[in-house]
Image (cartoon, rainbow, N blue to C red; front, side):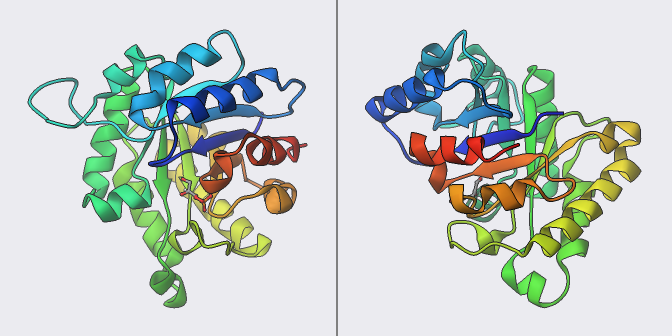
Length: 242
Ligand code: 13P
């Protein structure tokens, strides 16, 4: 399967920036990977319209577990689909930390995403303290077991919390070990479906380290934060995929 390079804009961007970035992505051809951009909710419809008919997909950064109702400030997976999204990130560590999202909440959101026809991207990853304590596999294994719905179909993103926005990345050997571990857990939880599922790496991916990270076994692509905000950086990462 082709690798997926996904951009998570987080709480960044404007209509003008989105139009410029979408134009640059549209103009790119001949990439060896699939592209997905996940702008803030206010920009999803505009970016989806700007990328309509192109090979670049659009996703949300979060969704509510319910389809509709009295949940002020939230948006549902169905609303993202209606705006032109085909995917949604759920369980990002920033949502888990800032909004107290538990594995059970993430699982409900992943179920809601699938029910709305969106491809869920479920995020997992350990904190620095957990890695120092040697608990990274136990933590990630627990997050997978708790966050993935039964019969899950979608993408898993491994994002060590300490690598997000810090410029630090795990060694290639550490990425290989974790992705092999996740592959094994997915096979246990999901059977054959888990064997071919894309497992993205996220955390300080940039053009200069993308080629080596994307060449690691069982890495199915990248979830990119800061470097997804500039077309040249995001495309630089995508062009590094062979
Ligand atoms: P950075 O690429 O800025 O480290 O962010 C990674 C991330 O959290 C993507 O979801």
